[in-house]
Amino acid sequence: MKLKIVAAAAIALSTGMAFAQNAVVTIAHVGPTSGAIAHLGKDNENGAILAVEELNAAGVTIGGKKVTLKLMTEDDAADPKQGTAVAQKLADAKVAGVIGHLNSGTTIPASSIYSDAGIPQISPSATNPKYTRQGFKTAFRLVADDAQLGGTLGRYAVKELKGKSIAVIDDRTAYGQGVAQEFTKAVEAAGGTVVAKEFTTDKATDFSAILTTIKGKKADVVFFGGMDAVAGPMLRQMKSLGINAKFMGGDGICSTELVKLGGDAIADNQVYCAEAGGVEGQQKVGMEDFKKKFKAKFGTEVQVYAPYVYDGVKVMVAAMVKAGSSDPAKYLPVLAATKDYKGVTGTISFDNKGDILNGALTLKTVKGGKLSDIAVIR
Image (cartoon, one colour):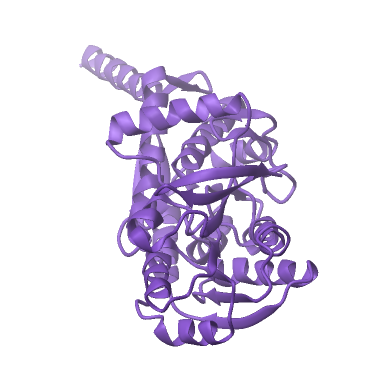
């Protein structure tokens, strides 16, 4: 009997040791994989899938123990209420970290839940400055914010496009309002004139009333704070109304999907946008390699922010490895101290707010039915 007990204990011990050697660390990704911008959410999710698969294939050791990374994926439908419900679900599940959300409207309300739970959150794409200005030690951002994005576009509208009468439309979301406000401030600071401020929603399809008003103001530049799913139909309606103005927007419209949605309504060098992020010189090689891997695996081109999600996962796991723990309380200070991490999106270091240091943005235009880079600006 005694021998059986000892044997059982030995088996239990060996089983426990085996389990410890193969511990599972769960990281979550959240984005809108349903709704009008599901193509952007799926793009981001695929970036997370690729990173986790690569890390598991290479082998990850944390605190002397081999671990398997598990990716938990959630859909927030770009809806703030669903975003907070998902955040609470992940907090209850005690995930080790979160990559997401995609848009500012879901990222900001979710961030307080992650902060309360002590769970590190890296947004690959939310640009509203408020996200990292709330004082949450758990919030990190991998791209330039709206102050940089909207500000650069506003100056470009006046100085380079020579806009005399500029109209501004926003979709009333946290992202749309934020980038439109920064654009407007920069236009006025550069000596430009905003002749119209109009509003729509992120689900609207008919813009005839606001576009007719803008046509009456003889606007030569139209800025839209919102996403590509709305911008595409808006461009088509601009063409049907005979509005030949330049069309500008932030990273929300800076996608390959916009080119499809706008179709022949987009003339060469009519659309100008800025993507938060950008690589130069030798860094372009790493980004091109990533894009090839991504297309080979998923059969589709990168939309916008998949590379930033990919880097977000890898930066988070690198902090766990360096800290020797996947416990958020232990690896969070290491994550915050990230310095000169070499990612496919460039060199990653965080400032004391959790923002990326020396964040870049890429100015782009549509030419020959494709998005083309104009310049990387820091």
